[in-house]
Image (cartoon, rainbow, N blue to C red):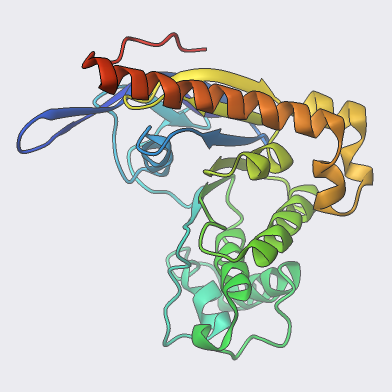
Length: 279
């Protein structure tokens, strides 16, 4: 059974002056404990896909299921991590992490134990009583991820979670997420603009077309990662220097560049974009 499945999903928004098609015919199956990243031009519907999986929005046609069940709204089996950390500034680290457990009707002792475990998992020991403004951006995002993991979700939905971080902190968080994927594997749908980040983290990379969003191609990374033993390399820069990594990154950039050029030609010629073939 697929952990997440999009079946011929179309999402249309009614704007004051026109109808906007955000997604057109998206079909994608994500297996249990698979890490899938979506990349594509701005406005191609990447975040719309995540919102549909989260239950924050609903398809105009088609279906979205998680664990074989139709998505009818948010649920505890799905946790979302946003780009902007969404921490409550008046709450301590522990209180922010505890927040998601309030509606789970668990015994107080179990909640306390889960929070302590999440703090240890994300290496936040010593920060339990700190407030968000006292933490760096990277540490705040660790809190946000801990708040997601404390729910023990089946699915983790991440919307450009490292986009607001500086380059050095971002690399550290990417390495941390790889560590988490080994220690506590989850099904992950990850939205990003960064091609290198997608190739480094994901088992598969979904490349989308320009608006309206369709699947242009799906690139399988996991077989190459396993064959080339990227996991034996501790540092991200060592992985990114591998010829196989460079080849995958170049292939995805070529696909995205082709989309950009097609869009520019369409504007120049005054033509409407033609229908792309979904992979």
